Length: 238
Image 1 (cartoon, one colour):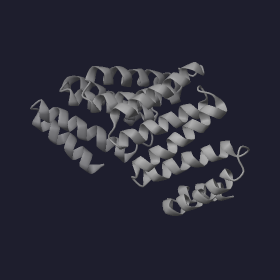
Image 2 (tube, one colour):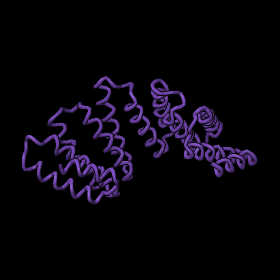
Image 3 (cartoon, rainbow, N blue to C red):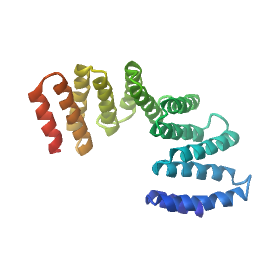
Image 4 (cartoon, helix red, strand yellow):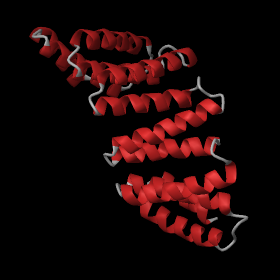
């Protein structure tokens, strides 16, 4: 009951109440080990998410490691649950500014997914995408582009051509080209994203704003001021 109530509070963004309730669940499950060990792992993982949302990343990481240790013991080193846990751990390390540990966690998750025979899946695409963004943060632009294009290839093969995840992937790829000062390549990728947005019956305003804004910045850097102004104004009008 405490676990379910904590999850409900989490969905309602009542994080402090969620943490308090999960804490009660931990006490119940610890008193009934080993039968409740799997449930205890899930509560630890949920506590890790709550503390991450509150910005307390060190505590979040501590709980996630507790969940991972239990999952390894119960399900082995190559379970789906463990792959998800490592992915979440990577996200929190990234938010905490530790890109090395974040990449290590993502790569471990990717290794497990490959062993599960899920190398061509949306979950794998998300992991590869995350690794690409980490490489961009480290200014390793060729590696970032390699990973992001690999994620894009998987998503294109599994999703509708106009899916927003493809548009988002294109925008991030264009951002890497922009950071690398490859403005022509960035514009090429952004124009593809713009074509997909026009084909999408309900493009989000965030997508349109981000694509138009980055197109404006690219044209500005190339000295094409009238084009830059047009895209900046389009971004404002979304």
